[in-house]
Length: 147
Image (cartoon, rainbow, N blue to C red; front, top):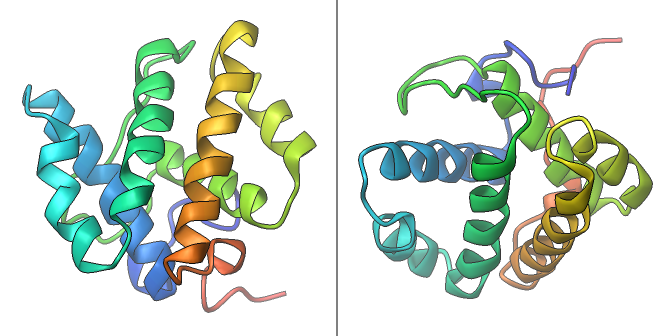
């Protein structure tokens, strides 16, 4: 999470930018009462990632509805990565590199324990589908991390 928080969006690689756009788009679509699947469908399809959308939607729905605290997200055009966006980006990266125990431990702080497995499963399925579609989920990271 700390690799991403409050960093400029421009420091994300292309896959990270798409994922952040999708997270923000999902949240803002749901907040307006629109169907996120319909709102995001064309963009996912244009990246050959239409099969990712159902599991992405499931993960976002579960996190959104079951979060133990109110999550907040930046507006679509915000140039910086907000705290909860950073948390989700870190979860996606951890799923992509196989850190399943980290994913479950982090999710345990975000959603009730009876929801952790369902969110983790949706994230894993979506990540696998994104990898098949050509996204490097394991590689999402800021481009300019300094030691």
